[in-house]
Amino acid sequence: MPSLLFCGPKMAACGIVISIWGVIMLAMLGIFFSAKSAVLIEDVPFTEEDIHNDGLKTCNLYNQVGINCFIAAAIYVVVGAISLCQVRLNKRQEYMVT
Image (tube, rainbow, N blue to C red):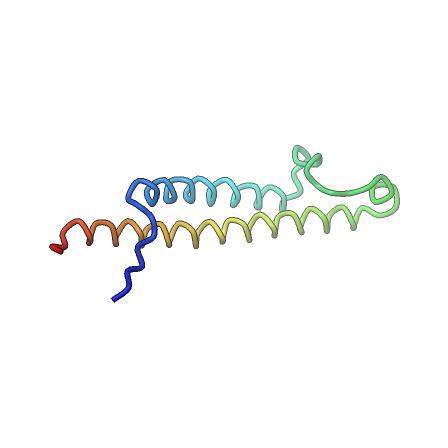
């Protein structure tokens, strides 16, 4: 039977820690971008004409960046779940007699 184990226990634990940090940070950034926080204006990809012509385009860009942050947080959740499975597989392998 092929093993689904592809990383060691330390790498799996590191993956869980980084995933938790990434989910928290990106979820908060997504919330702040969706709330159109003025502090994050430098991170919104708009041009000079977007500011002068229509404020709606700038609001849409804020929302798009917020959605991108939520998508990245979801990817971190998947990576964290894979890392958790790897930790469990490593613990199971410790008790196996070969």
